[in-house]
Length: 161
Image (tube, rainbow, N blue to C red):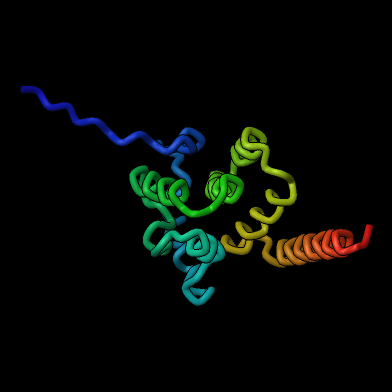
């Protein structure tokens, strides 16, 4: 009798990632992310987003160290309790680490609205420590815009007639 080992199907989003010598989390990037996590009281924004989606122990899953750990992270995102938009934003965040524009292609393929791209990029910049002051301003502006639109919609819906 011959037994075949059937591999689990890979998460569909894996095709957007580079797993060869251009792997986004090759050394020293994982150490840099861990150092940034330590500076932020052991919680990156990405950690908080994963936890909010019901993904336990984000510090074990992220950053991925190789292709297998990337698959585990993508599976955790896929199995999270988030809707598809939030899952796609988390994947966008990860693709941003390639720093070659592939996240824009992903956003176009998945039709991620520009305000969600901007919010995800702000989180990425805050977690990565790149151009943080500019991104904090953009994040505050975006949050203000969202709250303003939400307040206007609430008032509109409460109007009689």
